[in-house]
Length: 196
Image 1 (cartoon, rainbow, N blue to C red):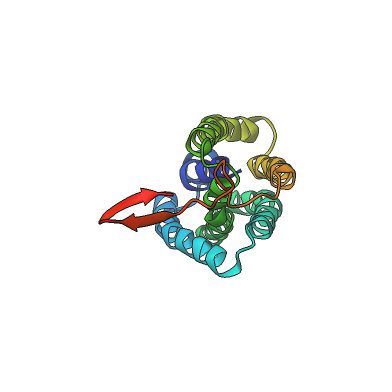
Image 2: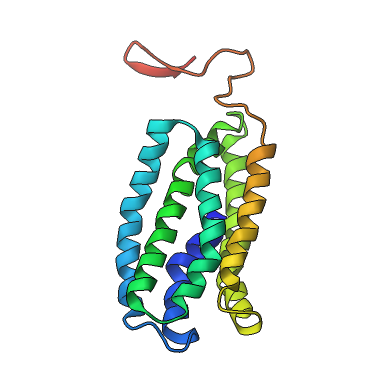
């Protein structure tokens, strides 16, 4: 959900507002740039919210539910061509995505044992970005051409459901230990840092 929603909200939506819908949204790329700058701030706020609440599953499910519901509605609203509505809708989608993304990476990292953490996470995450994020703009354009202006929003709805399934089936393990059962920690000894 994260990568597909990112590519739809921050990359494809500007082209959609400028070139695909009729009438086009005035100043579509300026709106997209402003929302992109706000998105940076939202990312910090999403991470801060995770740091404060420490409930990553709940935060991701609530935010993805917001994306699932708002996606089709906001895509329809944007298609009417009003720049104020487009800005408000795109900003709200960006905020929901940031709330979803804030806990996602730390939560994923904590759900893999240390000895396979980097390999497993980098492979799984990058395959998801390649497939979902890479094809999202093409699929969104095809959906608008062949179904309706709101159909890319339904793509976010479908991906949110897939995300919920993944969030629910991942075991509730957090903070793995090494093979001996001891916690992994760094210990300073004689000026050198050693893993014990």
